[in-house]
Image (cartoon, rainbow, N blue to C red):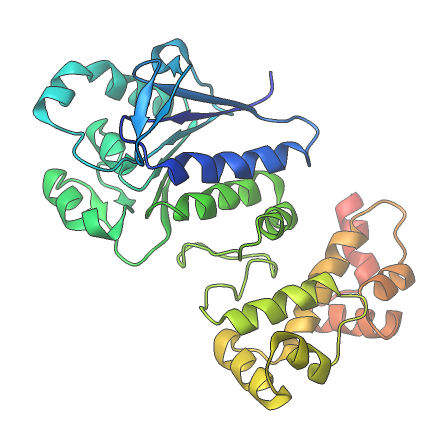
Length: 321
């Protein structure tokens, strides 16, 4: 069976907590061979959501049993939910979340959904994130957890918690990168017309994800342009014109934001693209060098020797073995 992505939506749901990550996986389903089954469940068949709206025809969470390859998103809400009455009435909900975690499924919370994970006991001793307005209250209610400030999302084994609302999209894209590679996560972010943002704590192996934690929109647009036109990137003056800056300003802000010059960043992009292409069966160094915008195969070979201590073909031979 293909893996599932299940969203639990509480009463008073914040709509973006659901539709943002759900849209990510809908886009992913058009790009992969085994699409995810997407399901939405709740306490009751119909629930009110923020904005005087209602969701209907929902499946009861009790009818859903997740496995190790599945993902559960517990969405957040606005208003008061975790009253003593609610906790008394729904112990099976927390047992269901705990069981889902115990079988090895990926369990995620968005915004105030972290409260439900904390009540289920699966955040004890772990770092987590929630909306900045709820950090102190969540920490006070559940002193065994470590609520972190200033991060988009936190990871603890198979549990992921995100800071709030739009950060659920960031978390969903991050999960796509973990499961399907950074290239697909970058493409999904492009489709959604957003920038890839990471938690700030995770190791960032891919150049598609590196250097994107800054807040300079001008530099973000320049980076995206370089990624999209790797084979024949625009000149500094043309790129600066496209993003609405002078070449001098563009160059200065680029280095200030990511710690590299545009030329150094472009070299990193080309190197990663070359590494990916060289893993394909039958690839030729000369063709890869051309596809990545290098001046020739000698430039690619020299860069490989400098960076990895072996030739490009030496890497592909090692992979084939």
